[in-house]
Image (cartoon, rainbow, N blue to C red; front, side, top):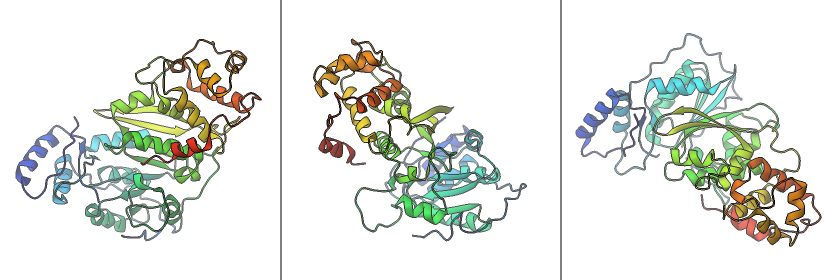
Length: 379
């Protein structure tokens, strides 16, 4: 059972406690908390840590206790936030991570720290990225009781690398500074996953956040400068249907579907009222004709094609290079009467790579100023 309620202020605290206590009895797995500088004291890669004691067993607060912790830190009218408050769900999330012997896990917005303790008990190296100052003292106390296994950073993961430049104050932060402080080094794109990230997509900005991941992944910028960063995210059913939509499902099959399926392996890990997904960038994304230089053109091509999902693909191709669509479709053995909403993600990639090497499409068939406007979305 899921709950999504804003944390109350000082008034109405007793009634809220009673309601949350009843929810805890039903093992409500999520709670809504509050939003929220301490510079990182050390990096996981900079200070040797003792190997976690295999017998380490931190006590996990029950759902009712987690509810109380949230309420004690409540401020009037906070933004909606969600946490894992059910120990059973926390264990299920850990089991799905498939961590290696020395995993590095970045946990976004741990709040009361139920999942944090579960990961630590399993021996994972955890970086807790918490944006709300109210939750920092308890997390930092836990950090100080361990031996480098936990690092707590005042940071909002979903506000990393904002557009613009200049200095900023936590919880906003640049990914380069964050990863440098943590001692996380860049690895080749074809290497194994260097970091796993767990969190809830921001409830009111799910679509914009996904688009931001798309852009920085295809550019290999921001967090993806360090390799194939794996995202383990809770998403709404609405967004899940878009991310996993198939050709012909015209209500859900969109540019976001094609671009994310082209770039990532998507796996459903857990089903509750919202869904828990793993999105792992494909090892061979940047092979063939796809590069970080032309990937923005691929993004814009897919967006233009799927703006009208019932339109014929050949008409769109001819609008870019008159009378060239029929030839390139024959070369790729794609039916000339196919509509844009019936083309598979791998076919869009093949089409793009063929266009990149085609004499007919050798000119600037998509304009730089349009691409720049497309890139500068207000996230």
